[in-house]
Amino acid sequence: MHELGIVFYIIRDVKQAAEENRVEHVSAVVMNIGEVSTVVPEYLTDCWRWAADKEELLRGCELRVNTIPAVSYCDDCQQEYETVRYGRTCPRCGGGHTWLLRGNEVEIKEIIVSS
Amino acid sequence: MDGVKVIEIKKSVFAENEKDAAALREELKRKGVYLLNLMSSPGSGKTTTLIRLINLLKDKIRIAVMEADIDSDVDAVKIKEATGVESIQLHTGGMCHLDAEMTRQGLDNLQLADVDLVILENVGNLVCPAEFDTGAVRNAMILSVPEGDDKPLKYPLMFSVCDLVAVNKTDVLPYFDFDLDRCRENVRLRNPRAQVIPICAKTGEGMEALAGWLLAEVKAWKQE
Ligand SMILES: Nc1nc2c(ncn2[C@@H]2O[C@H](COP(=O)(O)OP(=O)(O)O)[C@@H](O)[C@H]2O)c(=O)[nH]1
Ligand SMILES: [Mg+2]
Ligand SMILES: [Zn+2]
Image (tube, each protein chain N blue to C red):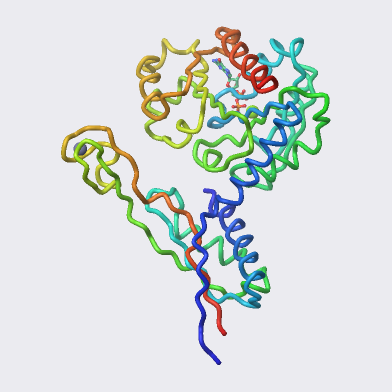
């Protein structure tokens, strides 16, 4: 459960971006959250509501979560497969020479402001 | 104009912490201070192990401890009483991990000019602390026998960031179906560089090996 800590990091980065772009209020923050990032979107948005409303810049600001499906790659078969379904074992060859291609993201994609 | 504007950011939320951590590591390098980040589940034996380890090393190097495992100062006081080395309590405010900034604030309370090794007892948790670089030179973890030899498979990130895994409570091996070789293999799958050292903090078995590893690490860091 480190969603609250992550929310504090998001707030810090959004504040910095708002300052650089001379923005006075942010209406939405869009996140890319990977399926295997260990971040639970519901917890994240709950923590967000609590913490964001304490900031003038972010009062009422919505946190939108884009889920990024996790995809692994097998070096032996040179093909991709669904990580959540098969884990570290390649469903084609049964081997373990696999690595995560995407799905571990915890990133701020963009912020939306009214102009 | 009543339109909306989209400002692209595209930045990992861990990026700032990683920068802070790298800067802290550089600063520690300049000061000749080795910071070890010790992690585990609650009750695996971090505090007990630290007491044995410090008593083996305190005549050779100057040591200080930062306690973050629980918000009360029970462990910090225990370590100070049992070893005599400086031991301070950090307050995480209920947070499940320490980041580089919190670690730096803790270090500001120590006299770093008089210390070779600082050990951070991180929050007891196998998930969150693994995500946040504290600025430590190395991460180490304790896995205790009752937790099972399959933990590296269940908590892959934790095992992939640790260079040393101490398997503690080997005195209870006869009562659990914990297989040391299987454990080694599971650790190797997650991190081929990681060393596994079996220890028993209760009896002191294996402690010299652990102390030897740490002493060599500290010396290399100060000389490099
Ligand atoms: N049987 C056994 N118990 C141990 C050993 N090391 C620690 N313990 C016990 O495990 C419990 C938790 O230890 P502690 O050091 O407080 O764990 P921490 O929460 O990780 O700091 C205590 O009751 C210790 O006495 C060991 O090697 N063998
Ligand atoms: Mg403890
Ligand atoms: Zn394959």
